[in-house]
Length: 119
Image (cartoon, rainbow, N blue to C red; front, side, top):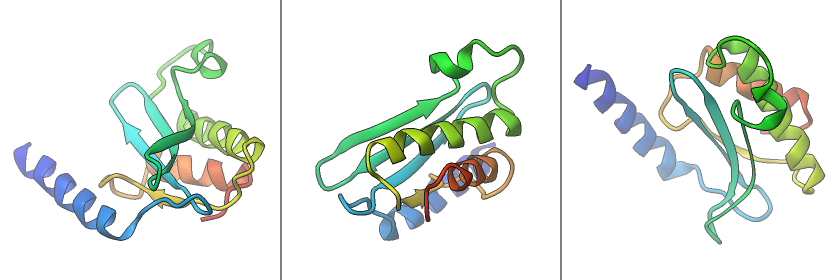
């Protein structure tokens, strides 16, 4: 188990060396737990979160069933994309936070693309 955590930390560190959010192209950061998934659009120059969405938001919390699956992750991606487009953001840089690009992370990214975000 420790080996997986160390590998994730190494991947996250390597990704963050290259990925940084600007006012023109903010960073879409993803966090995944066993039960929920979270996404934030962040401007790293100011250190502010512009918009965020997660499975614990009121739009998705009312739904029945487990929230840490691929279908719900896609809905979170679409929700964050709609909020970002409302805030005037069309292009983002995707930060997968050291997670492998498959399953829930991939589904959230696809949902965000379908919602109108470009990355």
